[in-house]
Image: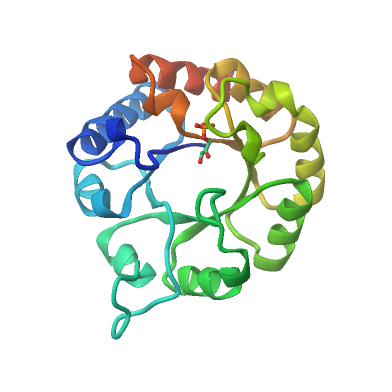
Length: 216
Ligand code: G3P
C-alpha cells in the first residue's frame, strides 16, 4: 500500500488536491499498485467525488451527529465515501485521546492508520488499538531528503517484529521506488509519504517509480 499524505501543501489543496488525486488514480490504474491519498478535511468531499481510489482523512475527532461544533465527524466521513483516516500523525499528535478517537472511527467503519514515532509506540498502538495499519515515522526525518529506509532501517525491522499481525507502513523522507522496495524487503506492507510527491516537478513519474518499488 502506498498512502500519500497531501498535508496542507499548496500543491495538494483546493483545486490542486483534485488534480493531484486524479494523477494518483491514473497511476494506480496503470500499475495496479494500491495507492491511496490522505487529503485535507476541507477537500475531502470534492476529492471523494473526483476519484475512485481510497481517500483518507488526515485526522478525525471523537464526535458524532449533534452538538460537536467544528469537529471532523467519522460517521459523516463514512457517509461521504471516505475510506479511512490517519490518526496521531506526528504533526497532529493525540496520544492521550487515541482510545476515544479510535473507538469513534471504528464505530463509523473507517479504516484506521495510527502513526507512531518509534518502534515501541508502534508496538503499543498495534496491541492496544488493533488498527488496520500502524505507520512508523521518525519525526526528525519527516520532510527531509534522507529516507527512513536508508537512515534508520533498524526502526523498520524492529517495528515489523513488534507489531505482530498488524500491517506496518513506514514513512519519513521516502522518495522513490528503491525506498519502497527496501521497506517491503524489511517486512513492511507499504509506505506513507508526502513531500516526495507533493513537491515533485512530475508527481506521475514519482508515483510510477514508487509503484514499481512496491510490486517489484
Ligand atoms: O505522513 C507522511 C509524512 O509525515 C512523511 O512526510 O514529506 O517525509 O514524506 P515526508
